[in-house]
Image (tube, rainbow, N blue to C red):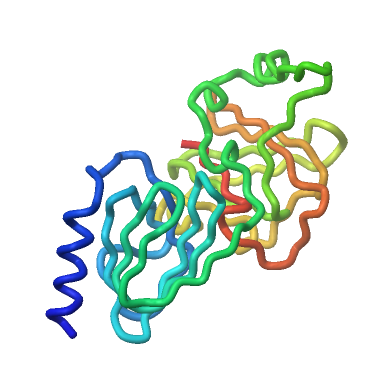
Amino acid sequence: MRSLIGAVVGALCSAAPALAETPAAIVEDVQGKVDGVEFMDYVAPGKIIKLGPKASITLSYLKSCMRETISEGVVLIGAEQSTVQLGDVQRAKVPCDTKAAQLSEREANQSAATTFRTMRADTKGAPSKLPTIYGVSPIVQAKSGGTLVIERTDGKEPTISVPLKNDVMTRGKFYDFAKTGKSLTPGGSYLASIGSKRYTFQVDASATTSPTPIIGRLLRLE
């Protein structure tokens, strides 16, 4: 079996494209022996992951919103989904917004006033849709040490202020509102700020408190 896996890894290595710096997917869950990745790691196209017997991994792709649960075998990370050898993969498209999962530097560095002035209208004159999360409890990626402030922009709601300390952040860079019992309002629009960085987003009107895939509630603020 080891020689077979070795042959598969060799074949995948020869077929893999040059490693890209931009992450393609995030690791949402790891069970059993999985070489090379941990929970909440980002993985880039070309990365190869080996899963031991009875091991599994859940990956969510940032661009395609494809969520994969893979059991055993060897995984080659692609741009929008994985190639799996000697294992089983179950795929499902989940609600997510690539604009929320892949925050642009321009959006992140605008001042609050500039953010609202530059919300462009579409060709019919309607406001452009804000980046959307699909759970009421976002997972915010940010550097530790600052203070995260979230304010509602389309109604009255208490401002949320969270000191981003290492002891409350997963892997030192993810703050999960669900773990601390904090939540936002379905259909609400918000401004998140850390220092001089500003980012506008909204919560989908159908969002609930039920468990939601990480990719659907991820806001990358760094």
